[in-house]
Image 1 (cartoon, one colour):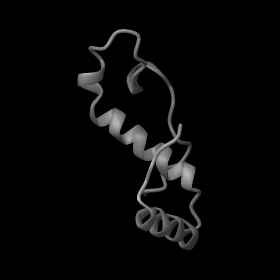
Image 2 (tube, one colour):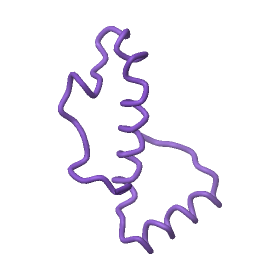
Image 3 (tube, helix red, strand yellow):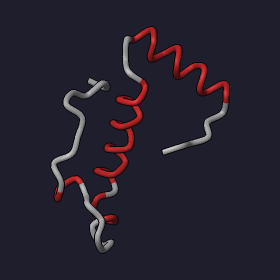
Length: 65
């Protein structure tokens, strides 16, 4: 996956993750998972789409507490 993020946000994000000792990809993965879970009802109507309740995916530990 490739995304475009404003440089100022990217710099702050990198710094925040470094200060907190958090892996950037783990934060991004958890945010995506949260978004999918929050929208699961809407997404469950889509054919051939794996949703949180139909697949055992998820971060091993939550960086957000």
